[in-house]
Length: 262
Image 1 (cartoon, one colour):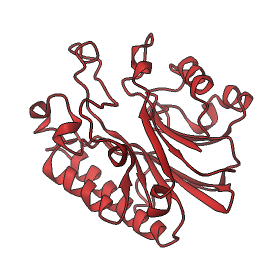
Image 2: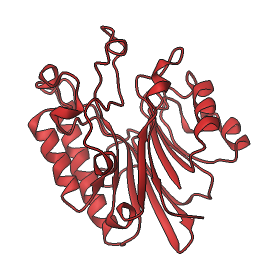
Image 3: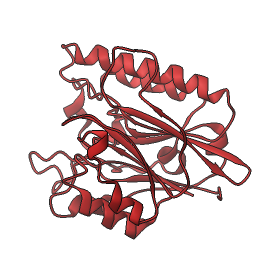
């Protein structure tokens, strides 16, 4: 079973890319972020034609997340618990049944948090606290759990081409990385770093200053795994070539392969 995450930066602008990538890689479950459309405006039909079930938590113009799955999506939850006043569409969760049990997949688009001296940074940290509380609760179920998405967190210096350029950025501030470590310390495994210590592995290249052409990227899209999921981890990958397509998203898909069968 292959589970992937991709911040598409507008599903309507990137629909052809999404279809081409799905046909090329054939993932079983996909977590999409920043779809930038309301739920009812999501283009379901092209994905359903490829055999995917679709669940969407959308929002006009901003944010928005979606799940695509070759297996039926069950127990779908829209929105991250813990703050009834938070109306931003940044979280969707569902269960898929596999041989011998279920896999729980949470798709998330964590706040950017910039500028750090505004209310945006406390919102980011608060979201991370709520995510940690949810993960702690879900881990009690002792089932394969995958938290996948655009975390807007650079975990370590190795995950940035020029870490010195990010020291005052909300993605790399000490409190951000500490909150990310607190999440991992619940017993979660970061999939890519469980399979490789290689440098120059990035999932995002800014549109500005020739970042893609100069390979000045950062790694901010992650899959975090419960022990039950980590035990089944076989391989990971970053589909870097997608960033070279015409009019691409500034993110590329990241995926993990598991020895699970439907």
